[in-house]
Image (tube, rainbow, N blue to C red; front, side, top):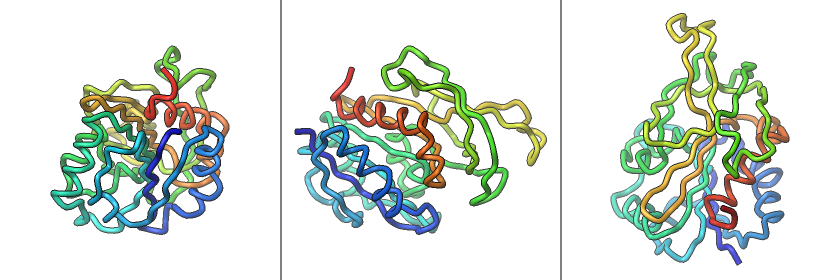
Amino acid sequence: MTRVLYLYGGWPGHKPYQVAEEWALPIFKNLGFDVEETNDIFSLDADLTGYDLIALNWNNALLSEGLTAAQESNLLGAVEAGTGIAAWHGAAAAFRTSLKYHWLLGGSFLEHPAGEGVKYPYGVTITDTDHPITAGVRDFRVASEQYYMSVDPNNHVLAESTFTGEHLSWLDGKTIPQAWTRTWGEGRVFYSAVGHDLDDLQNPDVTRLCTQGFAWAARTSD
């Protein structure tokens, strides 16, 4: 059975416990994953190589928070050896002082121009319709925090969003990836930026994208 370490918690603004109960855990159950839940970042001090997937929905409250050198080394080492990573939304704003964590993830949150917690409507366009993660996923709209991020150019981009310039005129027409994959050694990494509110995650296309992303990162699908 596929073993998953699901690390979630931290800043309550992203409702990590509600997201776990009403969205993430049901997805893992439907995938047939054996999930170990933890709300303790010190779980990353343990040997992580026995997991097939590490799911990350940890949310930082401060820019000064980060992983210890040992936690970062354990996480990167496990992924290099073949453990997958699946992460969404606030994971790109977590552990801000841990540069290698963000290198592993493939991106880092910079700003949401419409404001924190604002249910701003925007569209997400699927850019790779041939990938197994995007199979059956249509372009969709959500009303949430539209993440502007610093993104590794070596990511394989699955979906992107275009900014209108309504809040910062110089962003008009600029696109930012919203979902991507990458590899780190033998490990697969999947990230999706959508997910400030539970109803965004419960959008059928978002749920399908993430479900297939979790399976891909865990190597239970091609």
